[in-house]
Length: 282
Ligand code: ZN
Image (cartoon, rainbow, N blue to C red; front, top):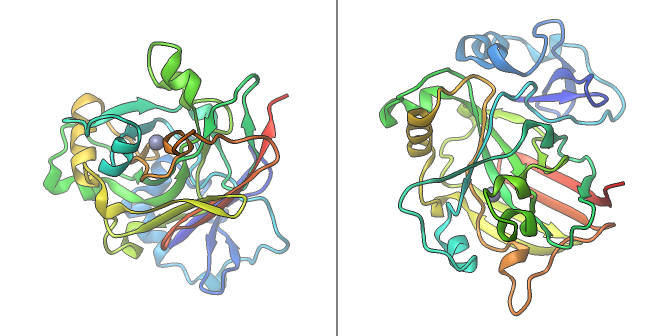
């Protein structure tokens, strides 16, 4: 299933994308694509619905972030060997873990704000893993039981605040609009192998990132097991699993960063596409 949230910001309704690409209204069945509504049992109930029995949503509503009420937005850094190399850093021995504030989350096609004073705002296409079952001290062998599904994430990053201003990466990662999620939460039954997905990103039609999740250093089950030793995971938590090469920071001889008025397009095979316009934060 491809689950989504549509409507005005903060008032999104739950929906399902049918086989014809139409949005069907799920609000008669669940209150939101969030928390306890995306456990395996609840998803199985939705799976049994006949999509043609659900009201068709007409027009072209805004698509919201595909998960609501995200509790934790956890990110993994330097998780592609070739991206670590372009960043001038060694492949980490253990996962690099950082946060994006949940207030950074936005819809997949919403505008992305360049923060005031920023000249180093950058892009990162990433595979998002959405947790559907709570747990801690999860064994790698059972880790996939905790996955509800996957989505596209743009881990938008302000490199000066991330790298040059001391302290943690979190400062440069969590600006408002730095976390487009979606368009869909694709349930895991639709993705045979999360480690064989092409992912790409373009700015103004020029392709900068072209990767495949097979080159991830720490795979999804390892990441879930690892994180669950540091924290409990809850349904609706989102893990962004790192970016392949081709970010602006890594471009030679000089990095290239985003300016207002540009367009980012990014996607992952089977998970859909995002499109954002960059605007100056006012
Ligand atoms: Zn990232």
